[in-house]
Image (cartoon, rainbow, N blue to C red; front, top):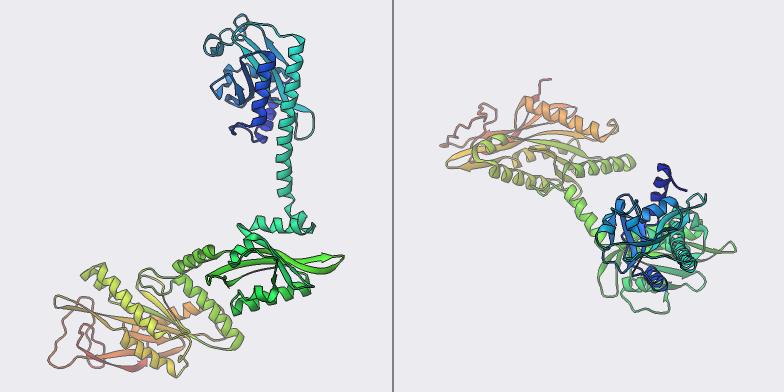
Length: 526
């Protein structure tokens, strides 16, 4: 007999484990209640399941509702008793006389309900999770034959639930033991690979004949009709030259080492469509000897395009279209790796725009945005084919130069860049000249990391700023590199708030008509 709260909690857990609540009707259960209705001569027959709050009918005959409140359920009493419950006249039974299902629709008078049990998870006996019941609107008795029929039909319901429970347990066990099944035959291994990859085809390469066997989906990805087999050479023709080399190397490595492979590469199907595919494979052994390669094949074009788009978005500055700080970090890490492996140096430049805030304050952010785009274009043109230009802050940029940046060429490059970065913003007769201040650091063996490289370039930048806006400084070199602006005759540059006007070998900002040249100044103060 069930009585403790712990027993009810266990019963509810067993019911939930079946995964049957709120599922659609099933023919087997529907047949069961129709049989009970017909054999016992009752207008209503139900397979009833009681959870925390309600009584839900998996199958019903003669009743229009799908559930009732738990507190009104006759079946709760049958489950609690874990035995056949017979009520010959509910109006005379103090447990049910005031029950809404008695005083109102469906006006229950007679009730007979038999618990439906399943095995506990720990095999410690059976526990009732449902009832098979018949109901009449007239008071009546039930004889021994009727009781036997009800018990037999309840046992059929138990068999249906047991089958469901067994199926659920097997599915759960199969998932938990997926890794242990890798040693099974080819079809099982292919199934497990398919579980890790959506919408895939399978393949097998016979090592003796070099012929392949493909599933229908593999043929579909190749864009060819389903056939009896494709020679290996023909199958490899679908790959790009680099992709073919990758596949051949993976196959050779797998055959020599016995290790599985998992590769992604470019691919062109029979219709000429460029795809991205993923191919997984492993060696099939027979009596310890390799006889075939087996695996799975997937079209990942959409996923790959999405990944590339997301990567591009994450690594591109929205406003200027050049690289973002995250892209710069990746690029520097790769250049540092190459420099250490092959002694190929490079130089990092950090550029801070001068008078940019004055443009935003005077002309608004659209004008400031245009300045940033112009500067980005100038830097992009200066980085060369193997370099990188990046925006790393509001008005701060970085330039990685891999060519023409040795000790002799770097000062010349900085002078040219200082000239190129001068840009006049003029509106209604007013001109603000934006320039750049640059800090540079050449990577060498004394620099331990990317962060150390950027710190040294930053230090050079701030040294240049302290000396003169619109100048440049190289880490380890005290010499200042700066632009020297000479105003043409008959033109008097307007005075701009925040700008610097210097004479006698100093910088003048503010005139777009000024000619420019650069000079190397004496050492900066330290």
